[in-house]
Length: 142
Image 1 (cartoon, rainbow, N blue to C red):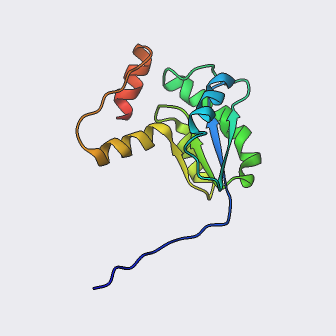
Image 2: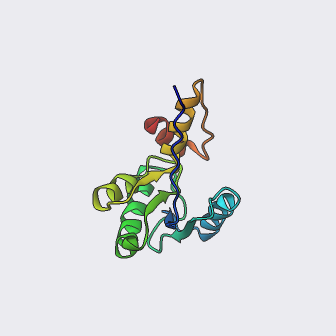
Image 3: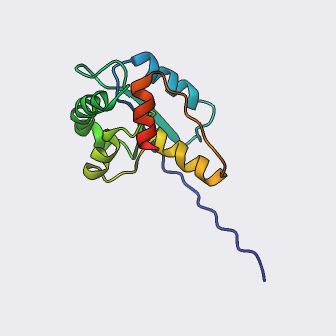
């Protein structure tokens, strides 16, 4: 039986929005730097730091809710310019599901993507938390 090779050639560029739901622009810049060497040439990722009144860090459920509300209000007006969305917060951030209900493009959070990847690899996983509130939030999410 001959092997069938399926190739999808894409000349269409993909524009993704990396959303940092906290108000720390240095974190957004660090996320973008971490992507530089791995992006395909047809993909552009634009960084977005959520404006005030978002928390500077998301360490608990309340921080997640407050930041999601601020990010949602700021992202929705510009969302039509992007093909997909990456929420750059290592938590089960409520912004992910909020955007999924509103937008037609794919939306994924970095925690969700990490958990999918580790699940495919099998074995055990560990998460290093920055504080007790973060630990509880991550345990609940996992």
